[in-house]
Length: 220
Image (tube, rainbow, N blue to C red; front, side, top):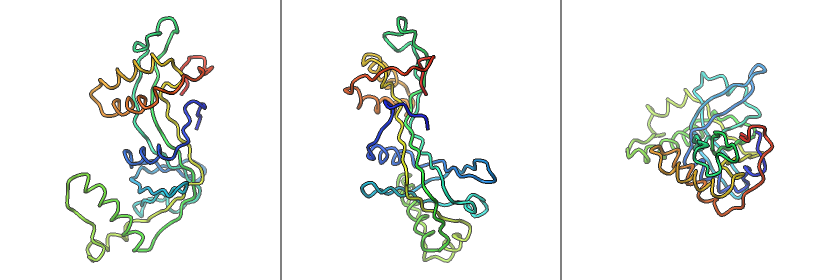
């Protein structure tokens, strides 16, 4: 992932927050020489620098058969940024851009077929999301009707070997520009814009970093 130094994050607490808010991820592997992609919910656990993701596929999904090195993408909030919001728009010839937060996790997939592992994955996923939904439904591994459904899925575990965190939040702009973008995004009606504004707000005290040399002034 192309990441200018001023957009790079290293603190894993940022990954904690990102996955907690955005647990639906993109899993990329290689099949027959081409990228193969699955979109799925994931479970996340971190112990110090050790990061582990778990999840499952539908058994007919062929991705599990080629499971090896993989890239898991966690998509955070994103929002369009208008050059009209920048106080120095005219003199600096500003252009539109898009602010966002994203994580790329590289690792090797470990396949899980045993019923206990699969039951744990399904139980933890449903418990988390049913609770957030205000529902009382639970996966019951002791129930034959529920347990037989596990035959239709294949589980995985992936321990992170390398983590890339990119938070593109106007860090290369003067503080006045950043504050103006925060105000504009915070006033938007959608959750994603307000989430980007919140991420930017926590970084307002950081010094402005050098502009990128991209010819449009709009490094992605």
